[in-house]
Length: 149
Image (cartoon, rainbow, N blue to C red; front, side, top):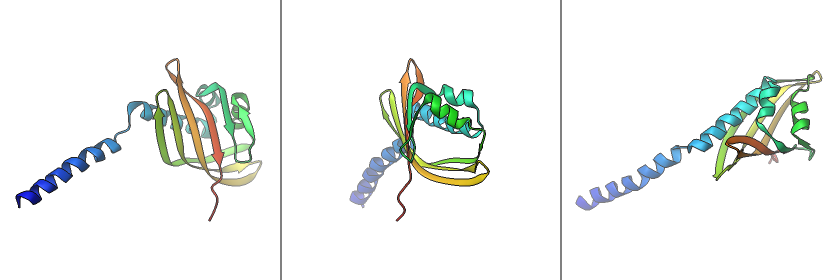
């Protein structure tokens, strides 16, 4: 009985802390997560000043078709009046912190209307945020279409 109780208690002490710490997100990761949500909301609501303020001057994005844009091109893309964004969702978001750099990966879903035609995108993305002069800015993005199996 004593050995069983000792074994259960030992197992509990090993599992509990790891479960607790896995559920905790470090403060800088939480800040970046909030900025990612703010960026997506600004894109959806076409708040171009807010959207542009979160992009680094050297920002670069690669879209699914291989085209790339800098900050100015991406901001113009987001401001396109012929596009109406109805849904922007992220899921399966994971954040890896590396000092003043954060790498985010996740699933992205966007639905809306472009030039009068409905669209519905499902992508995977990687965003790289970097803290410069005390402010987090998005420095790179890459979107890809998952292969259907």
